[in-house]
Length: 184
Length: 181
Image 1 (cartoon, rainbow over the protein chains, first blue to last red):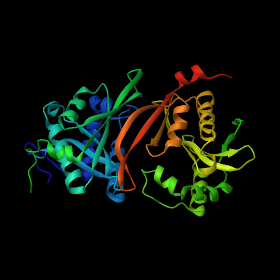
Image 2 (tube, rainbow over the protein chains, first blue to last red):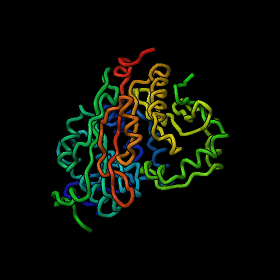
Image 3 (cartoon, each protein chain N blue to C red):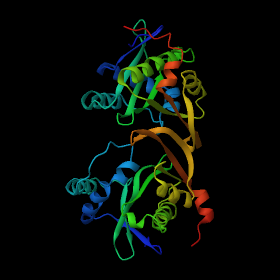
Image 4 (cartoon, helix red, strand yellow):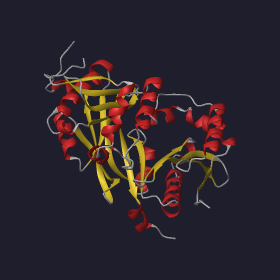
């Protein structure tokens, strides 16, 4: 279910807060991941987030790791809506050596496979900053399409930047290349 | 005073909650608020939330009623959230009394809210989410200069089908070009 060719997904654990905080403090992740300000977040924030995840059960938090069990990044679903069958997702590859090599795309496929074919959702949405070309390429490779351009939605680098609203539907996902997903 | 020729907008008071619960239980409200699962609103529940809001005193939210000039409450309007860093303000508006759906009440209430946000509230970009099955809401937004930014296709369930929703926005720069007072 969570096993890929080069990476695995696994549910987030309490101890992961340390790695999540470490990589969320990475300048690259800060600039490209947060709608809020880019003041590096504390480890306490990641712990608090885990606390909410584990006690309120209001989303899915995954850790992306390589076959040696090394922490590469994280992806999670928030804003799950079972009535409409939709969710938002967020993903980052924190480990600098694993960026731009298709690991994110593989993680995305495992994640979407779980969301569509196990959880039973219909549509997965995300927002991405227009200047984050690397992420947009990953999302397009995973089958996402742009639903709209949110003009001047984010203030960064001293000016207002556009963001893209993207989405993917279950039928389109299941028609794509899913060969990297290993069934249990 | 946020008063036009047909309606005024004012703070919600705890005495409005009975009326609001009535509005929020109507089929039209449930149909046009497809992101939430259908839930009935109760006067007592809304009163409890009202008191919690008073305690919290969050400046990023503002909840008002739309009333006619003879003080009949006909709808709700307000700010769901505000993101100071990115200059984004999310608003909502709903006419609960069917008799006032046409006749410019919706448009004027939204115009008063926009005037309040841009002239008084220092908003930069105002965002409203509307659904394709809400022609009155869509018309009121278009009349007030809202442009569709994102079409969320087949996004919410209504009468067994998935229908589109829209994120519509208006910027301060555009608004001020047409503002006369």
